[in-house]
Image (cartoon, rainbow, N blue to C red; front, side):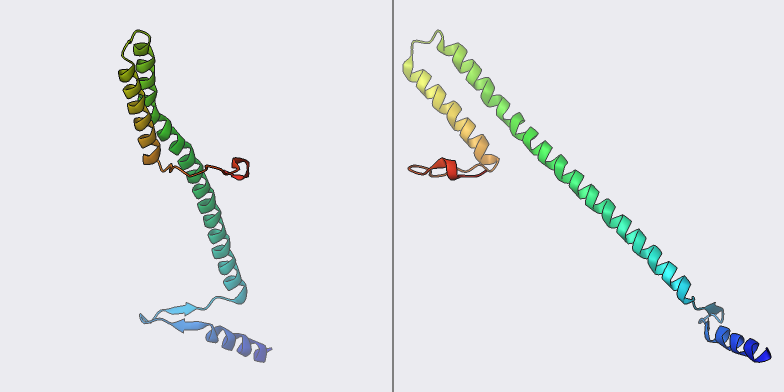
Length: 132
């Protein structure tokens, strides 16, 4: 039995390291190392899962708020149309009416272009083949 105690003591000595300050530090066993690595893995997995959920939520919020900004920018153009319709009920000046609608059209077009919408040449093309 004393041989077994010596072997166990030697194993313990092999697992002990001395730090620069002179303190002894015991190396972890295989089970402790496994538990430590498993814990790190579980934390990393949970952190990545939280990151994925957060980025998906941010993407949905961005899409929702992007549409909101477009609609807010179109409200002044809608107001211009309403004023033009009201003014056209009593207007006798056809050239003024035409000019007013051209101004509103240009304002609407510029707002859409500022939001990234570009005109496309679709003359003579089958539009049923275009997928949005």
